[in-house]
Image (cartoon, rainbow, N blue to C red):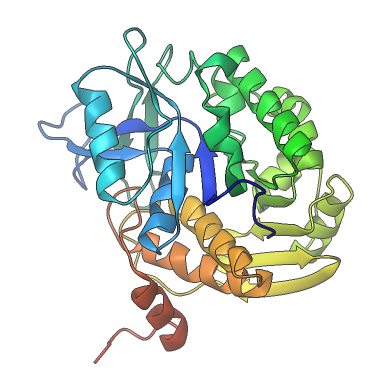
Length: 325
């Protein structure tokens, strides 16, 4: 990726919502628990933290309520190395929450959102520090932000317009959330962002549900390529692995085996690893790093990927070996 024309740019700047995450201990039900584990979580923030932990210079932008929950989020991000100087603190609005009930077969993990009318959902273009957002080698946005509210949809559109004007590449993760809007609404609203991104991430299921891209991973990627001008298109396929279509050439990366502790956030970890490779000028290395970082994410509790460049390199080198001596 070419550096921004600004001086001393961030490697990646993201914009979106972080929520306080409250998870039920394994084996308990949300409607019966007496304890909740507290973390933070949100796609753009998860990616920012992962990249900062890998030594990248990263900034995250949003609106947070001026209360102790907002301070908790900022303190956590700062501790993980993310620049939050562009975050707006607002006297109104609330902190979004989400609750996780873990489950093993035959039940599914359940996520319950309580995020309506959050400070982030109220965000407008006037709340964005555009100088910080555009002072970046890559801007990372997702399909979650435009689903939060009409004003957040407009913020995403404005981000694309300004990035194009300043020649700053945009990385876009489709990240469809069925609890926020319908597949039909998402497909219509996200199509221009898919078309305009320079780097595109999409789950295999989302490619089919939103854009009608069916077939093998390579076939789905080639159909996606007809919808976008992105030079690098990543398709994640869960436990099977992930594919990359780089300037028309297909590459496949099997998933790195992992003992699953927590599935939430692994897709954001993959995107962080992929961008880590792209920033080094090697999309195929990004595919490999993405698979390894997703595996690390699966092995820990919480959305945040608490890792290091040394651990990431070790996981890649060991190829899933379970002992490091």
